[in-house]
Length: 118
Image 1 (cartoon, one colour):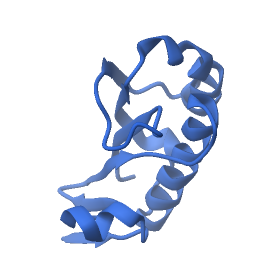
Image 2: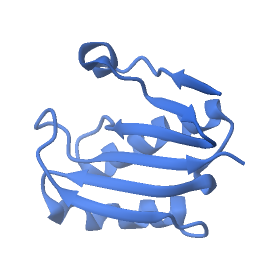
Image 3: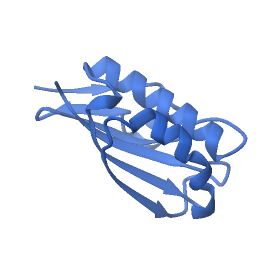
């Protein structure tokens, strides 16, 4: 079984992708950016969008097995740690953080996850 989850984000139609795909017992959530004035606010909003996609797929943040954080400035990552620890603290996934250019300079963090369906 495979199905796609769309969130209606502006780049989904422009670029040609969906928020998440459920396939092979996993939920693969595309890189997700959020709105806000800084990396922490954007991180919180991105996590909200990701949580919604996971819920639609039938799982939750505790089911996340892999997370990738992409930031244009790695120094903006540490202020996000308390929020990430609160989100994943008791069920930490494998994680990677990379410093990269994002699709628009207004975005300060992008988050991609893979979750195991229960």
